[in-house]
Length: 466
Image (cartoon, rainbow, N blue to C red):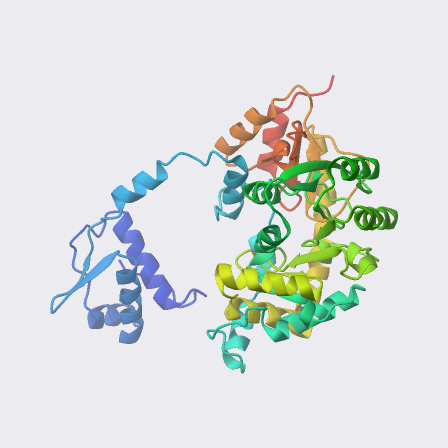
């Protein structure tokens, strides 16, 4: 009943927990069943008593078994069944953006995450290996102690050094760390805007940002995004008509299109920002994946009009909620105050982990390897999706995303719903438009979009050209 493997890479204590959990869920160990004593089970499986104690303690903590004084361990009554049923029966979020973000973050091995915004799990493990945790444990840092509110000094120094390599003049004093880019955007919105302010956003653009800004009751003014950057005529017209407080833009590897702005667009954006007096928030969370000589707004501007936002959650792992803002020191002081009032500080553990990954070239190697893999998979995904009926603009783009058009005869909303019943996650294009445009578009994650189940589903569902 308790057969375990000595050759397995899974620790013995985890095997014990998993085996007992299976037996309980399959009904082979009904409620009230007495488990072998610690010594007896240790003899049966040839393990130490300490291993069995550890396993039983974990199972007690999970509510699967219970300890009865002087009598031993017994299978516990499944008290959580009714509440779980109630939770699972709850309606889906009425906010489709929240629903998509939730599904993207969920770990479901049987779903094809074609609309996800994250790298595959096995890619992330290459950067955040178990060896990093070992080095943290053996090092001089104490990751359980409080983190300085502005961020771990060593990490801010490392970020500043990387920015200087990108041509962005910044020191550790120009940086405050955040819980990913999402908190950075929220903190900036709290400082920069009052209800009713006009804020320019790219269309299409990052759907979660739209919802964050709407929560601050600002007016979102869409600026069409082209293959070479924002539509400059539309941008200037919006500036004249609305006198915006800020413009949120992704210069490199735009989400969802994969396009990058050229130098001429960057200079014109900064010229308009100076002329009309608005801040430019440059979202560069995917910029490290750009290959070649990149032009960034912050590189040209020197953090005068530009507020630069970065994150390591996308490339090291979504569980590592470590982002940052680089800006003028006066704005950093305001961000620091707002951060303290909202979450007090960041996590020394998470920031130490990222610092360790950045140290010694591990992150650089990971990025180079990821960039090369994405380029290969992008070609394969585009070819597979085109064969299934998805249309693309001539510009190739780069990075994690493909922005594809569904033929006019296909109802996209129904397609997305039907895909989910087939365990395929698609990202509807209209979510990426603050104006509700892009109704016939889908965002595809290139690492999952050559998947045979996805391609087969699209071939079955999309009308074919005559």
